[in-house]
Image (cartoon, rainbow, N blue to C red; front, side):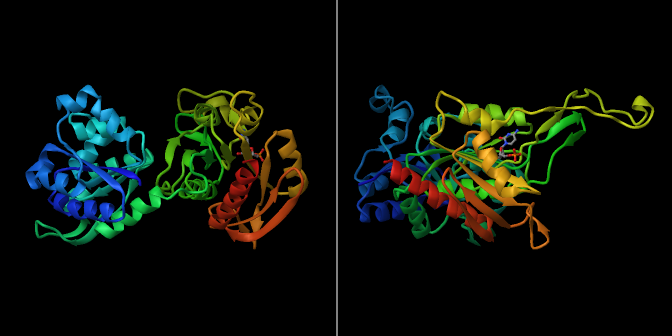
Amino acid sequence: MKKILLIVSGGIAAYRSLDLIREIKRRGDDVTCVLTKSATQFVQPLSFGALSQNKVYTDLFDLESETNIGHIKLSRNADLVVLAPATANILAKMSYGISDSLATSILLANNKPLLIAPSMNVKMWNNPSTKNNIEKLKKYGHIFVGPDEGEMACGEVGSGKMSKVEDIYKEIEFLLKPGPLKGKKALVTSGPTIEPIDPVRFISNKSSGKQGHAIAERLSKLGADTHLITGPVNIPYPDNVRVTEVNTAEEMLNACKNSIPADIAIFAAAVSDWKPTKNFQNKIKKSFNDGDLNLSFSQNPDILRTISETNINRPKLIVGFTLETENLMESARKKMLDKSCDWMIANNHIQKNKSVFNSDMNEVSFLNDVSDESWGLISKKNVAENLCIKIIEFFDNAA
Ligand code: C5P
């Protein structure tokens, strides 16, 4: 039996959460409800108590539960926290870390996966403030279900209706299912790094982040607690993944150091090997140096090598990526040994006359200490899938 903590905020859809409780109970799981003050204006706590057959919590300063530090304990005792319905107001509070009620304090102190089912008027949902808040909360790794489109209680039509109970329950079921990588912590680097020349110019490369993001998405779907450390990219972040945005190789290295201990580390980022030795504080003028500009570059730290060679908390499995325009396999094996990583994925730069950059396809070979195998030209999502199958096998064999 799994334990779900259901937080209900004050939207008209609060009454539909009663059906969600019935569904959770019907499947044999336990549910405890926390209501915001405004939720109690829509539905009586008694209804939640009767259906959940558990005490209903509404007040941060409820003496009995607070002597037991209720706002901490409630999430510690749960396997999953569900916020349904989630109003624009509670999402805004969460995005700013406000904890002015029992519900918002639980959400701030929560250490469990959080599923959010938004419900609000279409204009509220489309408001840029709400959009920014949602983007921020997704970056923290929270999972969203819905909202659906349709006619709202106010009569307006559009996106903002809380998802159907069966759709919310499907997500709950998926999140509670033990994935093969549940309990494993993974870090994935993705995208390019950018190295500043002056306040407006930089050097970088063409990496889109598609491969690294696909791997982070797959790891998370398989249950790994996944941290994506990414340079600037123009693609959406995967759901249920914690994201740290960085610019330079130095920043990426620091974020990786802060992310270990981890069980799995995948270095799919195209890290700039060099950075301009001097970072000019002001924009360099065309007249600078009477004409041509000569810049000198110094080497960036090698993140893969640094993490692979660390003695303390070295991740159990470290995977590097490499892309070459010549002698790919030979150079990939040499790099794997040289950088002390466990596996290497070797990218062919050109596939069918098209560059790998920004493509949805990838032509790769997989190398470990004993063999190499070509995976041919497949989608980046399939590369992620194949790699994750190998990762699951690795941990199964190690067990
Ligand atoms: O650029 P190179 O082929 O050496 O990259 C091989 C691997 O090393 C990749 O996994 C890349 O993410 C990583 N790398 C790194 N830090 C660097 C350069 C590359 O972590 N400065």
